[in-house]
Length: 164
Length: 254
Image 1 (cartoon, each protein chain N blue to C red):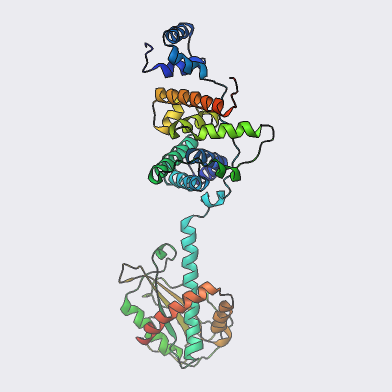
Image 2 (image 1 turned 180 degrees about the horizontal axis):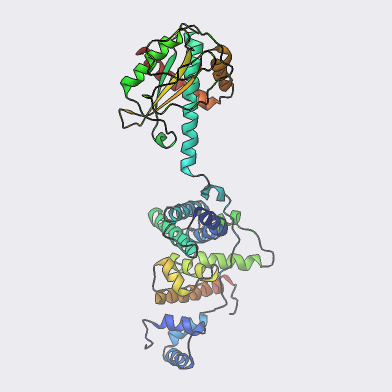
């Protein structure tokens, strides 16, 4: 990866890495640090990382870093309110359902939330998710299954069951 | 692969996501029928229940960019530091020592690593450098017989200090230190030579010696330095003050 390709990667994926980091740790400030760590690592290893693998490399570093920080600080509180300052409202989606989805996702174990984020938002398949999270493909499918079942239960409890 | 209570979640996932063939789907349905408690999970699984992509902006992308090669930064700093040394030496000569009464050489040491990439001037042993200083002092007190029309601050340093220098004449004056000229002649043109020795921190020997020669006349060389000084920034002035203290010590030994 050349300097120009690295800078193009910054422009292309910095927002996505930041969003993923926010979902990993529910802490916008920690997520910003995670983004910086990820791009610093990419710059250091730019000669070994191809442009095609740039995004998954960044997400993997950001995930590992934020999770290690979380484990270190033992932060588990629902910090969904902190997300509001960094998000852009989408008027075409009901706020209440969005809020319910955020709450349901925030209650997931970290690894399930990360897998679900990579699947639904970033569009990776199970094999790619496994590479990023250092899991087997079977483990990824199990986490995804548990995550969706858990979110459904939470939505039902909150009164926002989408009835499939 | 057989569906068991240990691996049913993967089977349920692939079933719900439509990744199984007809035979496998039938196996999953049979398993679910035999395990109604686990079948409840399959009933709760909703493929359409997806996390929403929330637009987020990482505002400080510029801080992540790598647009300034480090070598260029070092080169610019090195160039600035060298300029500071040249100017400070000129300022010292003119501002502190006074014209004609002061030594004509400022020996400035800049303990800055990584400058070897910036300059190509040859190195000179300390003894040679002192000889240069002595020669210049003698030549500087000689009375000029001709005027030099323009300053030559940009004249490159001589890389081979042992080579014979051209003999100056009244019409054509070479504003350069002359190592072979031990006794100045009456026709010799006074010159001021700024002699730089730049050290790498870990080295006791100067790795770079650079000399700037120019006619020793207020209208040309010194004025040229003063003109340069008017363009100095505050940062360079601060650096120059540091260089000055080193220059004072160095000058005391000349």
